[in-house]
Image (cartoon, rainbow, N blue to C red):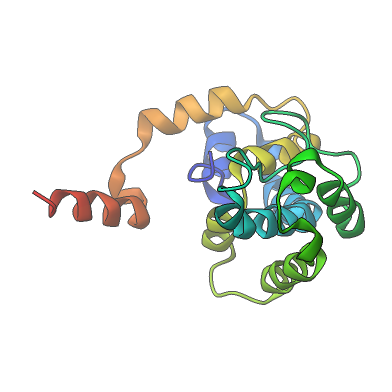
Length: 176
């Protein structure tokens, strides 16, 4: 999902499907969605950073406290996300949990997300979970059918559209 969730691609889709009202607001909707979810993503990345170290103690350590494919928490504030993550069963089952400053690690990611970048679209596509971003965008693009949008994208996508996928393709091709 992250590869297709780009303001310009959505704008093109809206223009081709007579949804001009959504087209006009897509860039502001993206900005709102990215800002709304950034603290949640920072905490998820902090959990991910610890997941490798904790795998020996807890074979399945999740990077979210809401459960797989669950809705996002109602409160996406930094304090709420840190508090809910540290109260999760996975977090408490990890041997290092009492030594970890999850809030401090999450703050590093929070600072990173707030820093200006040359290409914000590529940046959020790398750092933000596509399903999470879609869930927030759904709040801002009421009634929009993302499944139809993804199908439309798949029908038109080529690997050349995605330099990072092209790199992986080339790398794998060179392994032979």
